[in-house]
Image (tube, rainbow, N blue to C red; front, side, top):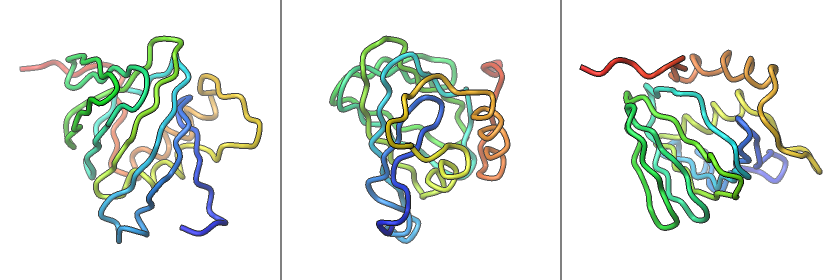
Length: 154
């Protein structure tokens, strides 16, 4: 990562600051500090090529994994295994900060394609139709399937 590369992105209303790039780890992982100021949620989705680990630093985050909700508070973490549908939400109006580790570093490349660079003075709000379109176009290229609803469980 060079000083010329952007290191803060916005995706679905969440600011994601790259702390460690895949380039630095030879692709083994990427590390982000994410900030949601409230009322955010990712689409329900499934990763085919990478896993995610979430560690909450501040506030509360709800992780829904395979249709089961779990509230995470500071100091708590969850492993989101590839192939399992999941969604992350900050329902409240309070800030949540959390660490996201993507293994391997596929998420970093997805974020660069699906999100946008945080602009100086930008006020973060809900995703725009253009944001959603960019997300939907990028997801399949990085092994991510966006779901409209939770799949039926057997």
